[in-house]
Length: 360
Image 1 (cartoon, helix red, strand yellow):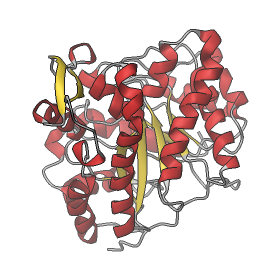
Image 2 (cartoon, rainbow, N blue to C red):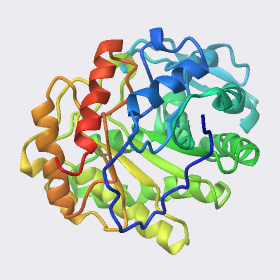
Image 3 (cartoon, rainbow, N blue to C red):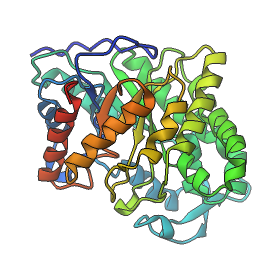
Image 4 (cartoon, rainbow, N blue to C red):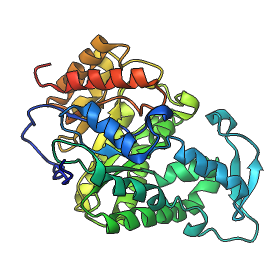
């Protein structure tokens, strides 16, 4: 058993690896997650010797839902719309309680308490090679604030408080395990905002969203390592966005890369879903064509792996790499495996391993 941490690939790596890496977005069917060790061991076993970019560790795929549900009894907030977390349409909405000034302690996720047991379990994992860094999921501040307040006029004044709360979590975890963690910044809000904004305003929106994510990254210690997981939403296993092409993602990512370059920060690696949890990957060349305009410094993890459509997954990966004019850094499903049965999750990883080979 060897549990050393793999060195982190740089954001501008040019030399292709012998194979595409694997990326697991982070969740598993509940029956596979009876302990932190079992959860992480499943991912290691199903990588089967392939390079794994990060090692997910969350036992409970509903950890963020638990946080949302706790807001109903949070004395810092008052309810403005009753609801449930069963779907996006039924989510409750809150406002800051009368006379209260919102502070980071009011809305903290306290992720270190959930991550610490998994970090302790790393020493007991069975691996023939060095362990990849731990994947720690962190929501984007815009997402957390939006799903708390439900209306832009209530979100914007308090966005810095949500950012500070999240960065406190990031800093606490990074300080304790500086070389063993990669943070996966998860944001459905980016693609949702494009979906709800007139097309003629997309360039302005891209700059605004890039500025917000840049602020998150700049607020963290400079040596924190990130992956950005763009998402179409998956609450109740139902996507919130139906995308027709990758133009919104490319506009946002290019804007973010330009800003981070000026700030002397590395662009995070990007997990880019090419399908939702309810649809397979597109094999329409027009869907992937915008990737030809993606800045070359941006490393893409292609979210094309759908176990029920292996040939479409293979074709989609070809189209992604043709449009990019370079290999994808890795392959992945569009989202986590929590929505799948254990058998389907295993089938997805099997297909991912097949697609990871360079002799595709």
